[in-house]
Length: 211
Image (cartoon, rainbow, N blue to C red; front, top):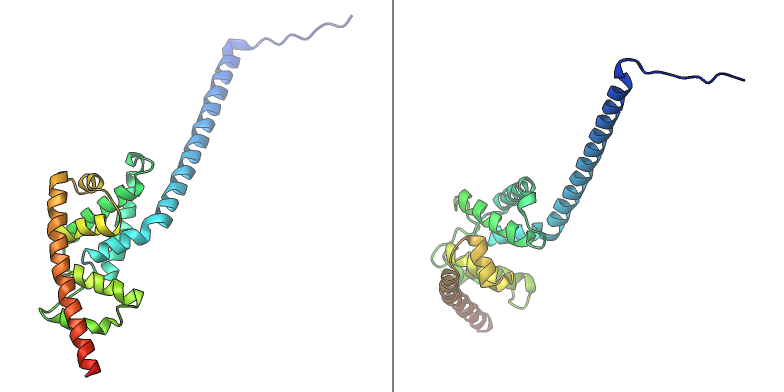
């Protein structure tokens, strides 16, 4: 009859080896979890950028920044979003980005304006082309917006052009809902006045061209 082989682990080294093995496994799982979270965050940021970067750039342009400054501010907005990604509630990405972009835009100030307008520049709005052309209509809209006070214009853009509610705008701009309503009313008045001047200028231009 063969004798069985018995291995006795001296001094508890097996227990220590088991503990090391468990710790190593835990570290591997934590590394894998971190990598998975990083991949999810990266995918979320990429989706946010694809869905909203044009909106953010356009909003900053309408607030008065030139093309390059708006592009820089857009990039800064998404860098802030990357740093604060855990704070952004799912489904509220657009509101977070626009609120952040507007704060970035205000911090930059109006050093570089999209429109360096003289008092009568809107009388030469016909240079934008026919109002029937979509691009010209957008340019004329932006030209009218340039006559609106910046603090009022941002509320107008968010409500009338981007479709945010008064409550959402109040949250983004960190102002009372009543202030949103007041600014929106005044913005509409200023926008109508600016658009009216442009319309009169175009009609005058048309009459002179037909004369």
